[in-house]
Amino acid sequence: MVCMSKNILLLSSNFCGNVGDLFIFESVCNFLLKNSGDVRIEVHPYPIRYDPFVALPTINKYEGRVEIVKPAFRIRKSIDHLMRRFHLVEKVVTNIYFCNYFNVFRVTRSLPFPGKHKYDQIIVVGGEMDAPFSLLDVHSYLNTFQVPVKRIIYGPISLNPKKHHEKFIRERFKEVQEFAVRDPLSLKKLNDIGINNNVLIPDCAFLSFDKNKFNIRVSTHKKIGLCLHSRWGHIVELKEFVSKISKACLEIGCEIVFFVTNVKEDYVLFNEMQKIISDFENIKIALPTTVEQLNTMYSTLDIVISDRLHGLLIGMLNGCVILPLATRQKVRGYCQYLNLNTNLNGNETQDELIAIISEIYNSIRFHREHLLCFMEEANKDVSTYYTDKLYASGLLKNENS
Image (cartoon, rainbow, N blue to C red):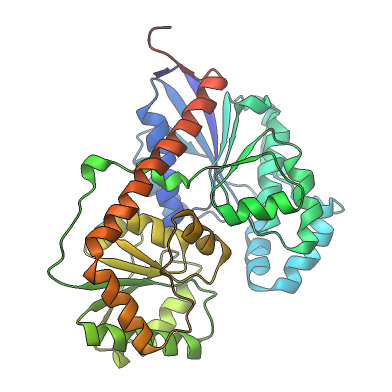
């Protein structure tokens, strides 16, 4: 297949320290560029959380084939931050801003001369879309550029809509012909509230899967990665959970690497962990800030324990066995998708943790081969979804046509 000289608008998540999102962004860009002849990709980040010190090194890897449009209004960054921290602010903004009573800072205002932007394809890179702010940004772009519906690739995404968001979400998804959902629980939630123009497709991370590079490893030194989300409990609960994990791993003879994948959002959690790290003799701390650093760190691990979905999926892609901390819907959704019966809820005793982790090590090759089979199918499914959409829009052509 070849791609004619075309312009693609890529709506990506954020360039503000989320290394997991950067991994997804690079997976999509690499896939598009690998299967293209002469294509130009223009990136508009959403929500408005843009840090040039994060974005520019990422974009510079592509030597001019990928460009980023810096957002014009910084106030939306503050609003988004407040919504994520305070549910009352989120509810007020949802009921006012998202009902279109107050739209001063709609995305069309931040685009100078939107009529000059001509795109042959719009791709909404997948991710968690629970914040309606993200949905409003995305659909404002779609309405601004008015591309035919067949030229939109939307997702795969996760959604767990709150009751007071449902009407808003239904209205937004009427505007698209089809979108992809990346886990069965999100699909069911959307179907339950009457949104059915969707299809189940694995996460964009699997676009980067390469069986030739995948290594079924046999470990001689046991090492476990522990990656937690910033919303995981209070510091007392954190210390109690980490203490149980640490003691269980000491019993088994495992080293632990504690890390975060969102440098900004999880910064407080990371600092709190630094304060108590001296209490645990078998835990080290890592802070990967680039995709390369993240992949290098994963290559040293056998098992990843996490309640961050991309913390788990990127671990899989690097040959790790995953032990999900299934406290969030999208993680529970992937446990169902992967047919994983072994996961944690955070309330396990030390003895239960010893039994679970020991079982994984005793059958680690089986677990890796199970994940490998899923990744092969996931790569095929998400690649086919993207390729079929690009063919349908006329962006890709057969070499013999």
